[in-house]
Length: 153
Image 1 (spheres, rainbow, N blue to C red):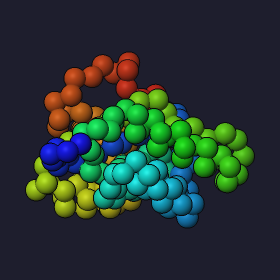
Image 2 (image 1 turned 90 degrees about the horizontal axis):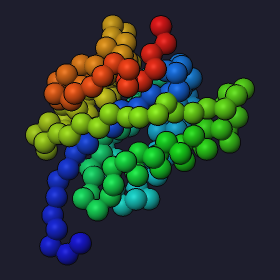
Image 3 (image 1 turned 90 degrees about the vertical axis):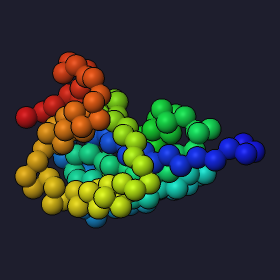
Image 4 (image 1 turned 45 degrees about the vertical axis):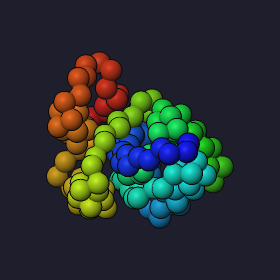
């Protein structure tokens, strides 16, 4: 788009179906690289992708002509196909429906980057459910418990 300038930073968060702990190292890192490739193919820049065994965080620069929901759909769809083709699991992998998307200013990017980079440490003391609900509250996102991810305890 001519004469259109933007600076949109979005953190996307989504989990493995039923929040199972399936994203094992070292192949989890291959999935993140693959996701970065999907994002790049859309003409976008991924800043960091990281997570733990049951969920993923993606920080990226979004362009206004790209639909966020279409982007997340494509990341989930193509990474699912990639994971299943690798035969890392004995059954079909899938992501849970839904996602969180949270916007940040340029001044917050380094802080968010470090937060995502340190997911392993963060989740020593905090579950994904706790983290996700904290995001929703911090960003004043209205939600109903029955429409949140399926939590497995």
